[in-house]
Image (cartoon, rainbow, N blue to C red; front, top):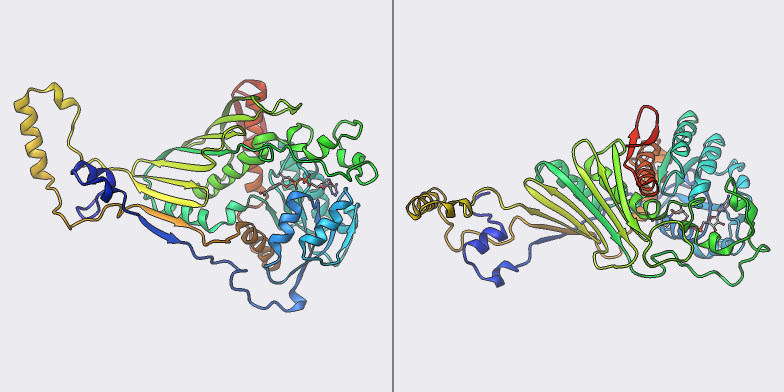
Length: 456
Ligand SMILES: NC(=O)c1ccc[n+]([C@@H]2O[C@H](COP(=O)([O-])OP(=O)(O)OC[C@H]3O[C@@H](n4cnc5c(N)ncnc54)[C@H](O)[C@@H]3O)[C@@H](O)[C@H]2O)c1
């Protein structure tokens, strides 16, 4: 710390007014640096043609977000629910693409280079491995795997067939998280031993209580195919539309939301392995609607160099989406789309606790010496909040478009993506550790050599 860059706390200690202390920190709107933000014309011969499998909530979002990316074209979509064929066309602005219930028709097409997979989690393994075998590059939604075993089978298939694979946690391509990574890499935070993150919501939609469309029936939905390897059961629209609530198809809060938090944290911190150990708690407090997952979940993870605490709560949205990286020299938070770096008040403080157990004479001598060695800055020599930095993306910024653009850039150039199959698998293992610990009521330990979770 120089005398020209006091922290807010220092300033307050010097007796400055609260008005000055609330002065705004330096705020920066980040500049998109991505491929699609300054599109170059792509010759038609270089256009990457793709198909999409699963055009529900996320599939349609992906299609919409893909529209600004130059040099790509969606030509086919597969979904087991007929109304979603229409939804896919609408998401593409009314484009008349080939639609089908049979995803194999997409994989068999020679004019398709890549596929996006946005099915529920229990279908990811089969679609990714079959897509790789069919010679397609594949963008697969998060969480990459439904089980630990699935993840390693997917890695094998992608690598065996030398395909590009990207998993769909879009924070990894976000300019906000790239700035967070830059701050992390700069060492400004000092040693970080604690990271926490939360994603709290308080709406029925946030808790996956999605309405059932009135045309949903066994006529419009291929229910038996949708079940795939899951136990056979009679048509149940609640399971079809709210699959996140059920263990046969989804992974609850950990698979839906923790995976985004873990992916963001792995990206920022450069972590290339799953957590070593996890302990979970939580409960089902409000949404007692037959779901098999809690509506409040906490997990504490051990990594080699830091501890991580994650929380998702469906019953209070005060915190929203939040990350805190707590270092010896500084704190970095991401709250929604605002990134803040704040230095910690450093050690240039006079001792003001234990000296009250000293006689007044010694105490006063100590304080006088301290003041001599650390002269207070003169008024006008410093600015409050000078060390605090605030960053936000520009209005309308879409990290999903960036993520899609990064995938197709890799498809075209064969240059690696950050969130490849190994990255995605590490993040998904974090979800499986969390759920294992929650349901087993035991610490979940990652055994990397056996590629298995065991009870700790
Ligand atoms: N990256 C994100 O921010 C984000 C956001 C939401 C969902 N997701 C992920 O996207 C995936 C899909 O989630 P969703 O909310 O869109 O679910 P959804 O239920 O709304 O849509 C899934 C669609 O996949 C279709 N489908 C299932 N199996 C199929 C098959 N074999 N062939 C063809 N179609 C098939 C279903 O018919 C359904 O229409 C999940 O893995 C989810 O975790 C990611």
